[in-house]
Length: 317
Image (cartoon, rainbow, N blue to C red; front, side, top):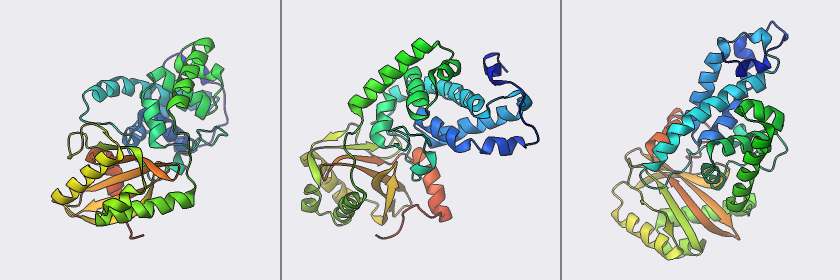
């Protein structure tokens, strides 16, 4: 155990099992790790690693378990982000965050404007930050950690952490989606999208797509997907029509789902493959369509659907 991690060690109340102590903070830690990494699978791995380290810690001398565990998870994530950034450079096609269906369970439980925001647009904006900017912004602006504590967590002085968070905040404000759609309107647009998607009705789809809409498809080189974002309503419609004509695996199930807090749907193809579609809506039109087909990013959703877990959305609307 490093000296830095021992900053939080002081006498504490005893008598609690380490697993019980840890579970109180699992949601907090998972939410932090997912925002840091953009991957639910990697976030759960980071939290599990923190759990193992927690068992090997002299817990009687930890004053603040949450702060202590946040430091461990933050450092694990920073280490992972170094290799992740290298992988992003060779990633095939657009990179999208691993979709989550139950974004509410990853809420930061703070008064921050970003506390419950896990939208794809925000996650992509976070990807553009440096690892330290991302960590400083998330810890302070999302999880409401004071800069004195952020400095201890990151091993930097307070002034440096303030600058890191400020730079991160500025970038996020520039690129974060500015419009929020009402739930009923989002549902209405989603139903129209799903109907057009099922029937191949180009006119129906054209009526709900913004002229400057953008389609992102993440296949990760493991599933067929556009290698670059498709920009403009006309190009998106042409692509979807072409795919419908050449589709070797028809959609056998299509159901509504909330993807990263956005209106979306889950599709199951005849070969058992699943994909997620999330819609970013502004001014009553779809401005961004995010499609994830990379099976590595859908494994946890696939496991839930096979297990029949409620909330997966695979039912007819």
